[in-house]
Image (cartoon, rainbow, N blue to C red; front, side, top):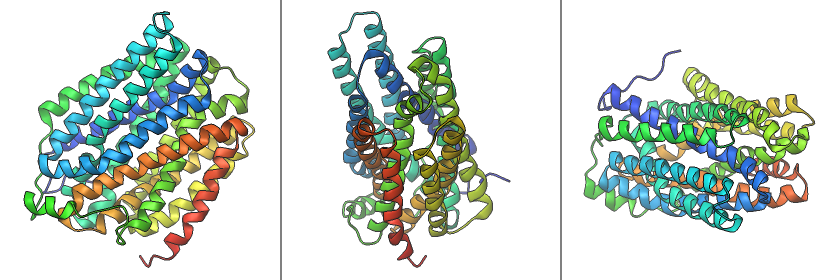
Length: 403
């Protein structure tokens, strides 16, 4: 299997490599934070709903500002927007390390820590929202419509590789609970330097800055060309949010383990999902080269089967099997969703539509952890059962589409 090489529209191979490396590092840092917050929260005495509320509010921030940042990437350029986002998650990772260190040393009260976590995650979300639409728009700029799903799947696979490395780093928590965060900070600093030095602005062929701004300003969430796709995307990423953010609570409950002993199996389960996602994006999507709608129709049922296994899991093997199916389904559905939305609009609207593409996962991460946290306190299996029902509910939207 041969990876998609940078096309004639790509500034240079090194810039493309730095772009994918940026996506990978974001996956590492994000997944380290997602996996560690429940474990650290349990140790410090926070309730599940308190921790998931932080994630939901951060995701709400991304949802609200991503369309605005997407339009800014049309005006200011992809490179500047990506650089803002990289510096944002670098700074926020440093801030998290500082807050947790002060709390563990007794220099920060529990209430002050919670307020600091809330503020730092909101700031992180605002700045990261500059990067997410710009990365998607960058890939769109350097691919033809025929290459779109394959190119976006490579960006998704780069994130998936980071998602594999992130949970793997979490296993370092066996020696020191904050060790994974220290490594994440070092990675973020390195990527910020590489982006600043090597990332090159892509050309946007046939689209003037004024034309792009005029067209993108008219886009809204309920545009009939893509509103059905956005609904499907929200549900897909709601499922991903429930899996990544609730597993830190769910796995210890299923396996009846304390927080420190749950770190290693949690890393295994999260890593299994990430590996399956990368396999779907990096192997299946590029070998099969199916149309975006076919990818969506194949991925949604596989995701649903994975959540059925998770909702009924009684041990580690079922948790791993469920996350493998979930990751494989996401690896097919994710690129299918992004490519379908991108191809539904004009070239001058790509930066703005990339903002909506970033907003959909964010809304999923608002609803998933928020509902999941409260449902988990009612019964640990309910969040996963909810996702199964939601995936079944959006299937008629895909069935109504011709292609």
